[in-house]
Amino acid sequence: MNYKRWLALVSIVTVVAWFGYDAMQTNRDDDLVRDLKKARQQRRGNETEVPAFSEPPGDMVVSRNPYANYWFVGKYQDGGGIEIPFRPGESPEKSADVTPRHENPGFVGPEQCQECHRETYQSFLATAHYKTSRPVNETTIDGSFEPGSNTFQTSDPNLSFEMIHQGDEFLQRVHFFDWSFEFPMENIMGSSKMAQTYLYCHQDWLYQHNVTHNTDGNKWINSPGYIDGDAAYARPIPQRCLECHLTYFDFRGAKNRYTPGSLILGVTCERCHGPAKEHVDFHRENQDARKAVGITNPADLERQIQMEICGQCHGGSRILKGDALSFRPGDRLEDHYDPPDDELDAKNSVHTSNQLNRLSQSVCFQQSQMTCIDCHDPHHNERGNRKLFSNRCMTCHQSESDCGFFPHEGVDFAENCVDCHMPRRPTED
View 1 (cartoon, rainbow, N blue to C red):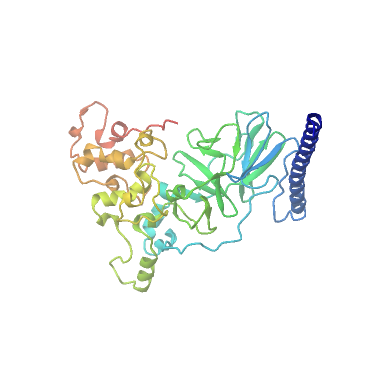
View 2: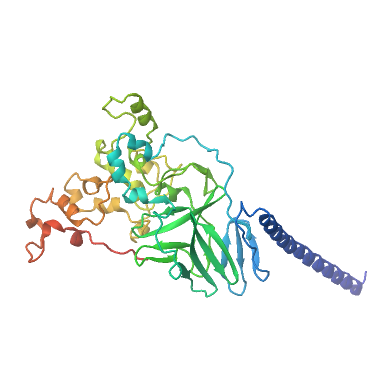
């Protein structure tokens, strides 16, 4: 074969290959559009069960990231867009598989405790620990859902969010160019001291919402770490996050899969006293027994071991060595978690402040046998009560004259040690 014939053959093969590739890509795009339209038609025939979600307009880019397990919708020239964990045009689905993957080690929930500890239970309901995760409803959710104050506009004029209250449902509605869709706000994370952020389920996967309510200023903002100008609804919630916001959950693997119905919300009695099933069963059958059986009283533990119960969540950012929720009162943190990162720990972030380490550096701690609960009563909401906390300081500091600034005209030292010795400071971000 001479050179000219060889060159002509190569050219023909190249052209055929290009048309073949283009046809294949077109077929893939056509298949995607057909799938979206088919899903939409199926929903229209069954709108009583599935909310109507519209597929993106034809001028938008739709692609799936197989590695991160989410779908992207956007416009190439803009760079930003939408990330969701299900096919665009569909909606979050409830899982039909509610069978736990693991046996519950004995967590029963705080409602079981009130049979014998009603007064403590009632006061505990007002604490930040109890409120650190809750179901969304009219009494728990912060922020306004009234037109005019229920929106959040991003730096991109083509992307905004609207908080919607319809019947018993609370929703975040995303407006992206001329496309919009909604996500249910199902669970709250955060006690409202700083903020509330929100979670939703798709099948048995748990994800975070893009918009959070910030308590200071009473406003809607991007969730921490989110990029302004995107709408990200595919951020997975790993078990280490839930471990500091929940009492129990059945972890099914794959980073953010949990058995629906297994979640015991709030950091409640059993995270400090241990799983209570044995305790509850024994005392139901032995109602005259006065000695607690099958439960741990942290006050009976030596000081450092007692404080390490608090250190599960107040000891800096710690990475799990094994399974979540394996720590039991009386265990050592080092057996369940890697040490916190000193650099991150120094930044005073909401998730990295190491109160356990900070307390150990104080003179009060070093010259006494005090523990966390000498100042903080975990069973009552005492936030902001300067006089009460100052009175606890005075149990060791017998006189106002112990203060180096005493006397000072117009200052009642015995009623406010806090503003000088533990002033409230904002986080860096």
